[in-house]
Image (cartoon, rainbow, N blue to C red; front, side, top):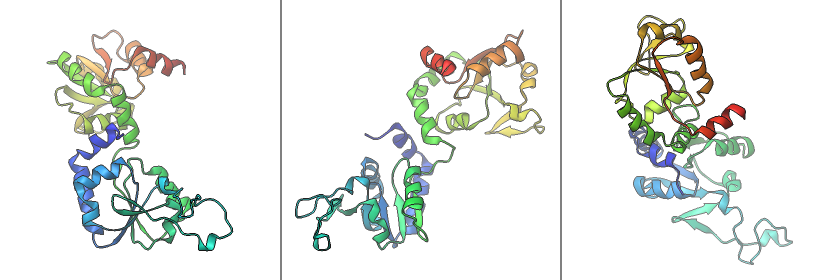
Length: 276
């Protein structure tokens, strides 16, 4: 089953542009694919890898235990190994091989189609010791821990709670607190335009330049929030309880500024995060 990350990521224009550009670059070269799963099947329907690219084989761990013609497992030891014949497997019409066979293949480009390419890259470089090859990934994270954090947002239904929050705060001025990768991800994949965001604050802006901006929002030091006096401060961090407490009891004490998390989580999830 394909993840939410797959569907959200592949709908973005940048994903489409980057993949088409990469395919144009490697067209005509001998390409070895890594990843024979649902992701590849769906991508192949849209981008026609098997028609556009010169694919020599596709590798995946599920091909590690292919059955040989004499009926025993290819990983077993037998006296007639030198004359042992193996069945050639195919996936989507492409010759299928085990990842351990990659060094024996004649190819120029290794194209990894998996949603999470990091462990495969480690395997390719550290265990197979692949060198002097053009290794590419279809899924490229533009933000640190992009896949993990995006799935985290969907786990807590951010796509459903955000519209409700926007409706509730209609006509109210909002300051975002937390200028990190988590908010960067929110801005990239969700429509925040319904919020009247007047700026963004973070400790990193304690000594900011005049008129400094981050992600298109004017930057403010935490100490400037009182003077700005927004109706709401929305905390846009993954873990926010301690930040909200600090803002409420210290920085914004004795003000009418309301403090809320931008992403809402269930009570028991917060308890587990606090007490570990």
